[in-house]
Image (cartoon, rainbow, N blue to C red; front, side, top):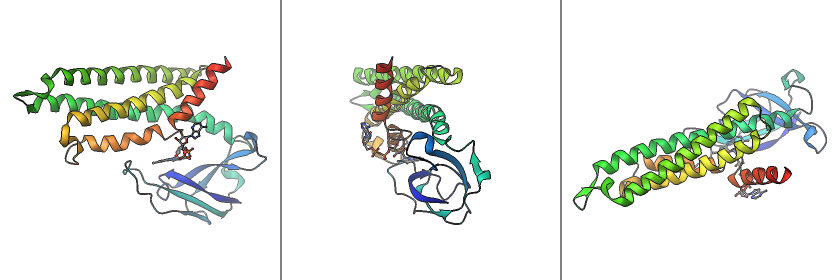
Length: 232
Ligand SMILES: Cc1cc2nc3c(=O)[nH]c(=O)nc-3n(C[C@H](O)[C@H](O)[C@H](O)COP(=O)(O)OP(=O)(O)OC[C@H]3O[C@@H](n4cnc5c(N)ncnc54)[C@H](O)[C@@H]3O)c2cc1C
């Protein structure tokens, strides 16, 4: 019988199945098991869709469990293995969010290059101002640095390297922070038009912001990296 609520579930109320980490034993990590809960199970219900700054293509809501009876056949692995499964999935999830930031930032860099070449101010293209070229140069440099680290972390996860979790945390932190900063600079280069919904940048600005929060906040990423460095 499962009882409780989980805040902030992407796809809640839309998804057909919910892979849940539930407490089935004592207080420690070994007291958590992994269950697959079907949407139509009695006692499962959902909160209203959250109203968000961005990520509006993906619904987010609470999931409520009220005496949900889940058969043993729906348990993934053995009792007490849930925490281990959750940890195993986190590195890949962090790379995924980092990659989303890289994609959004690349699009906004491309848009900023095209726009500043076209937009004329004070008798010349905005791209001709040295400030614009320096901003574009920093955006491209920060993007490539984040991309290189993310690819390196992805290789480590694929190979099962002992430092894969530290690299995934470093890559997620850098890609999401750099991604938001690059989009912010792109918005600046669009001037007032960057703030309008008629142009693409403001949506990326809102959508990428949550990547520094999702899959563990970037403060938690620093905690993972710092602890791992000190353990060596
Ligand atoms: C749009 C959206 C979709 C989401 N989808 C899902 C989903 O599908 N599944 C899911 O499980 N979750 C999901 N989440 C939840 C998300 O993973 C959490 O919001 C995130 O991990 C942060 O947790 P919190 O909101 O409780 O913040 P808190 O933990 O309350 O953090 C508040 C602040 O305190 C800081 N902080 C917390 N602990 C420490 C510490 N030890 N040291 C230093 N600083 C600290 C944080 O960095 C942050 O700045 C989603 C969230 C959003 C916004």
